[in-house]
Length: 157
Image (cartoon, rainbow, N blue to C red; front, side, top):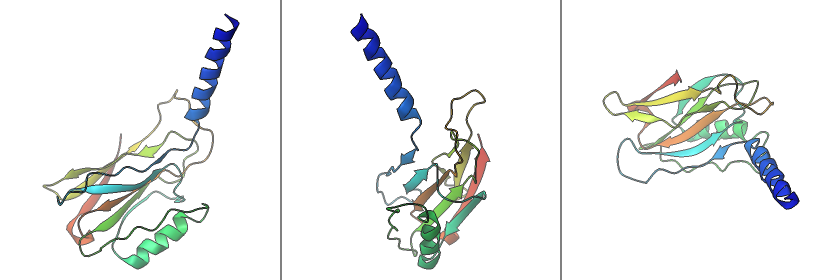
C-alpha cells in the first residue's frame, strides 16, 4: 500500500512539473505545391514581442531583423529559415506581453476565396491553472505564396 501511494505521488508530481514547461512547437505541414500550404516555423510562449503585432515579412533583410529580436534572449537561438521571397513569405502573429502563461496563437486556416490566413488568439479560461510568469506568445509560419498575394486576419477565440 505504501508503494502504491508513493507511486501515485510521483506520477502527480511529474504531471504538475510537465504542465509548467514553456510550449515550444515545431510542426511541419506536408510539403505540397498547393497555394494554401504552409509550415509552422515557431509556435512559442515567448517570442520577445512586447506589443501585439501581425506582419508579413517579404524580404531577407526584414527576416534577419525579426530573428535578431526573436533570438535576443535565447541561447542557442532559432535558425533563420531559407525563404524564396519570389514564391514564399513569412507571417508573424504576436499577442504581445501577457501577465501569465496559457495564452497562444492558433495555427492558421486559409480562406482560399479571400486569400487570407486566419489566426485566433487563445486565452486561458478564468479558472485554468497557468504559469505565473510574463509571456509573449506568438507564431511564425512560412507561407507558400508571396506577400503581395495574401493577407492575414486575427480574431479572439
